[in-house]
Amino acid sequence: MIAYLDNNATTRTAPEVVEAMLPFFGDRYGNPSSMHAFGGEVAHDLEAAREKVAAFINCEPDEILFTGCATESDNTALRGAAEFLGRETKIVTTAVEHPAVLQPARRLKAMGHPEVELPVDGVGQVSLDALRDALKGSGKAIVSAMWANNETGTVFPIEEIAAMAKEHGAVMHTDAVQVAGKIPIDVKKVPVDMLSVSGHKFHAPKGVGFLYVRRGTKLKPFMLGGHQEGGRRAGTENVPYIVGLAKACELAAAGMDEECRRLGPMRDRLEAGILATCPDVRVNGDRAHRLPNTLNVSFSYIEGEAIAYRLSDLGICISTGSACASGSLDPSHVIRAMGVPFTAVHGSVRFSLSRYTEESEIDYVLERLPGVVGALRAMSPFGPGKDPTTYS
Ligand code: PLP
Image (cartoon, rainbow, N blue to C red):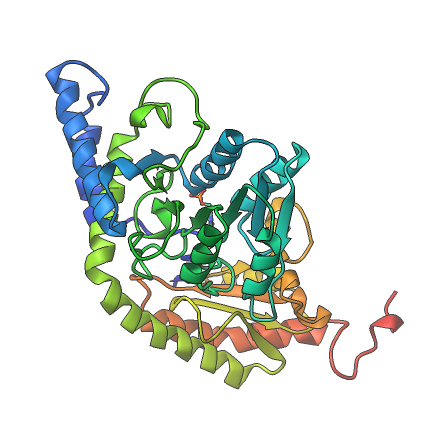
């Protein structure tokens, strides 16, 4: 049995999306920038896809830039706006952003921009007072705050954050990667200037995303070359994947309410089952403001990696909160920023559900997890009644 509960990492490509893409790997292979009618037909398909993506977030088609991934969207937003506005522009972000925002922000700092990473509280919420202080008298500023956190599912009050940024004259960007398909996005209601989305987080293929850029927002292009995307993102558009992305947007818009109604209770059943069967567990994140598909828990005294590897042997796919896979044993910057106690910080794991998650997968995890946790705790030098200082 496979229980795939790692949907915040990536999702299954929807069969309807694959079907929509197929003609573009066959006869419809023209280049949308070509002058001939064969390419022109594909240009028409590209613009039809742009209209569908624009409808998904309630913007105008010319406000959508197609990109290769959300990492590119985030880099384009921060570096493109910073280059336009100049070196004195302050970069304000949060301590729990994805590296696709934190790393460009830190690069901009190394290039001379003042940079602030706002702290978060114990449930991963950013303080609006801290944001106000960071923006006070700062002159030009770019604010980049994620809409929802990929590790904990904590949802930021993005309308209020964006309103405050705009009040102070800042350019406002949000990384909405984990929100697409889970919370309706309406840029007429949320005053962001830029917003990043990635296709593979909501059943489009990997390798396609978009950046929304509100009309009037000034950016220097990040990718230089040809005149594609109105001269704002060079490179031949990945038409098959863009058509797939548009289909995924349509499917998400049509099924979002039902999916959230189904996933929330399923996630809550998983959470309740874990809390009932495993002692010394804490839930990480803001349970009152959380994505319906995400559960992050810390098992005290054991390593998240060990749990994930043991579950993987049983066919259960989850993520840890740590950066171990990237060659570091440091615990997750998100969990650390939340001030999770030392005994629990290394033991965080994330379960994330999708449209294709079935109740039987939850049953299977609840059946196997307590045994895995118990076995690892039996081997751990840490825990109630154990004195780790006696181990050399
Ligand atoms: N931002 C967030 C919040 C993410 O969760 C991810 C992927 O995990 C990214 C950005 C990067 O997305 P991509 O894989 O499309 O580059």
